[in-house]
Image (cartoon, rainbow over all chains, first blue to last red; front, side, top):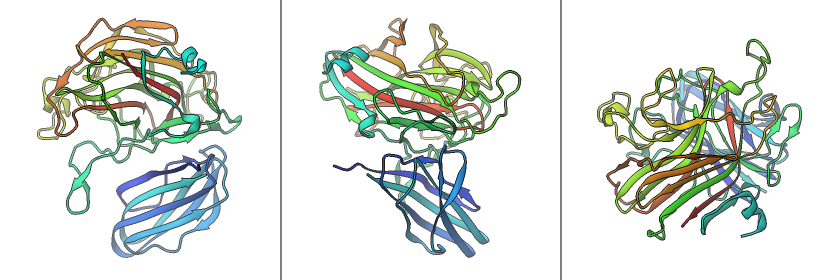
Length: 111
Length: 312
């Protein structure tokens, strides 16, 4: 039977500027979905863009190439990643006028 | 029980848990707030921000130069980590400066007297930047404030926490001594850093409640007698060494019995465990847990290879 595990990376946190998620070790898994649940969004022209990053040591990071569509609305959004080493995180950019995103971010892994 | 279990551990005669994290997380997860408030499952209000405790994960202990360290029993261990944030020791812990892993089971045989926690563990700091002074400025042993293991328990109407922690460093000064959970605060308000009306109760959640003092004292813990013990911290943050911990308590008399780290046994002298009134709904709760805390703006890690929880 495969292993599956989901872990939170952010819970009900109001994010107002660029951030990276906690470095997560995914070496055992074959596939990953980052779920980005927007519980609330405020400000004007508020946009969240999430980009997947990989790392060889959990300290130094490089863009993997997967980027979300611009996220502007409440609800559930996701990014899929299929080829990675031991580490994954999201680099998230927040733009707009006084933007606030209340986020739950979860990493779902299977392998 | 197989020979490996018997040779690496010293279980009591009823083994409840034998988790080897090379096979998965085995039900160990991070501690989260409770989500019971309107309008959308909001957290209970508290002065302590608990949603920043980071996720636990299966780790290969992979570092910048050597690559993957693996674990004692295979390739994966359970990693408990912090975020790179810390307050000075004498302040409440910064959100994210602690990480926990907890497993949730229950007392299914109340008449068993002894309860024991054993684990093989390793600890290190993130090898992020060379910012020390003097000899070995890129060795971050003193970034680790402490780590520990124990239980959150409620049985027969008694709610209590029992556990031990290794106080490794206080504001960058190495301490290397064992302490056990026992609250000395005046009352609930004192326990919550002088806050009136927080939902916490003296003795509950000593990891983040109980005043701390710059000399290393903590109102949630007492020093183990003769509890000084240097543990193996390798010559570089990217080398980890697996070590052994055991804690034995008496759940009939609610007393500490003894603890052991490596081959050193510490007599806990039948010190009482502090009990409070029971919480609603959770009688029978038996939650073993481990935790780690950073002392500076750097992530630190507790790796757990395997755990045995046993009763007798």
